[in-house]
Length: 273
Figure 1 (cartoon, rainbow, N blue to C red):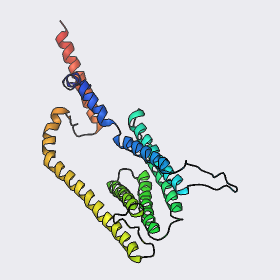
Figure 2 (cartoon, helix red, strand yellow):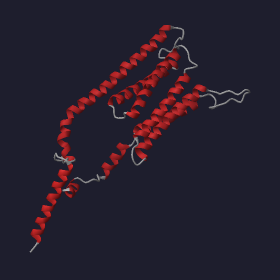
Figure 3 (tube, rainbow, N blue to C red):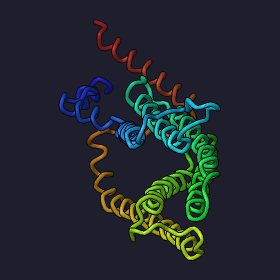
Figure 4 (cartoon, rainbow, N blue to C red):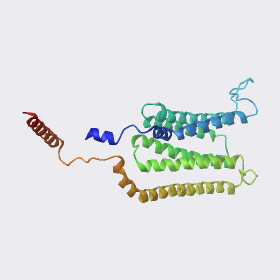
């Protein structure tokens, strides 16, 4: 029966299926992190008027471009996270999810430290924007730390996805608020209405990201409930499932051994002259 199953259902798929499976297993998320982090790193280096000087040659010497160096460190961390994801999925003989999660938690820890010090020299609207971002990063750090001890909890994974969406969308909004306002006029730090509208925009981001995540979940649930019956019907044809009969293991083993002895005795009786 085992040999027959192996002949009917070969373990080695065709070459075209092997190529498709290899392409499917590539860590595209890791590659995207590597490409994005590298491009942003070059952007920070090239956007400065001078070179990326760490310490000035003046006496007494002082550190130069502190915020740009922090931005550069954040983008390098993003690139390293992508390298770890790619190595875990495509280089190592077996995927190491603990390595990926541990690296991500360490990077978020460093990101939180950089963000806290990054907001020291800010005030007004810029300080409020960074404070809201620090809040999201802190909550994400708590969720990721909890996932190290409970990696299979769907609630934590859902919260991680939502906070990742919040961090990314608010980072893009912060870039428009601080560097390229939509109105064309800079925000006023002494105007309380500007700070209030920053909080309003943050709440809008929460609602939009939650609705976006809810829409994806609803579409996935609808797709699963519509196509799961057909998958269940076609599933046994592709990979047959043999259910084991109920009973204790030692009793089943004794029954198998007894049936084998009877088969051997019957075979000997037939072969004897």
